[in-house]
Image (cartoon, rainbow, N blue to C red; front, side, top):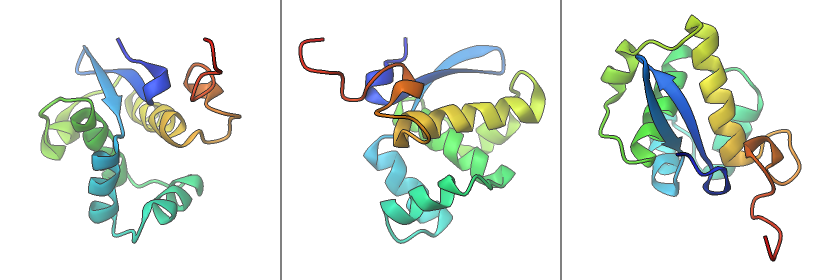
Length: 120
């Protein structure tokens, strides 16, 4: 089960449930693959909200590998998501929100404040 406090989400691809997480290593992979110079530039790119389908493949692939799945981008490209293209967009949006806290206050979109308040 995905732990939103660690930036993890669950997604269904090809009828199977997967956990995805953009770890620091996965983010470094994306910096290189997308030609961004640093983490801030990567976050700014995603903040603009314009993501090509090849970017979605790379983001989903990096998230799968960040969570421990040994799945290549080529395999991700062949996978199916429920609701077609909208399903892929939803996975990417949830993963980026869980990672960067996009548009929320302290990670609420990912299932609560991140990090959780002391004593919880």
